[in-house]
Image 1 (cartoon, rainbow, N blue to C red):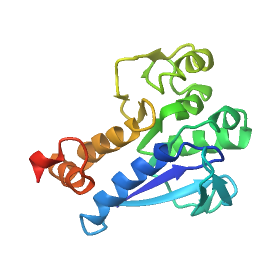
Image 2 (image 1 turned 180 degrees about the vertical axis):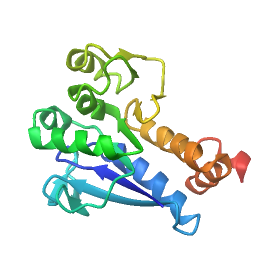
Image 3 (image 1 turned 180 degrees about the horizontal axis):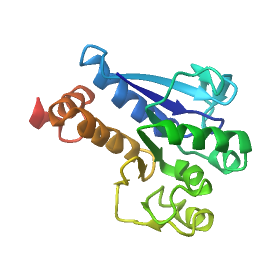
Length: 196
């Protein structure tokens, strides 16, 4: 079983993390709950407020979470302040180093860019964030035509709903096409009827 840790912070974009959370949770549920354990983490473990005000009780803090095999870094307005928090950047960098896969959704790429992890790699983010990402990470190669980009251990996706696509891609990469399609059918996502 792989641990999927979702980093949350104030003013996070809801679908950026809820979409991937659903993909990995449903995939595990449909397969006897033995593929992924999904949990949320915030710096202090307290309640966070999403961009639109929804309050989320996180499962863990930086100090008490389980090991993370897949680290998800969502985006949202809050990334503008998170990129200036030394404790957050240090924690992200440490857990990136320990993870099998780390991926950003939307403007979560700002955090990877600030850490220098996107240097000399292709990346993508929300179309409105591209100029800011280029400023933060001038050495990254932004491919505006991609929905998501796989650099091996490090992946990025475009805006908001693209996190679902990248999550399904990772499920297929780790578990196979049959399991991915089973998840798509349950979620009634995209071309799901042809697999039903």
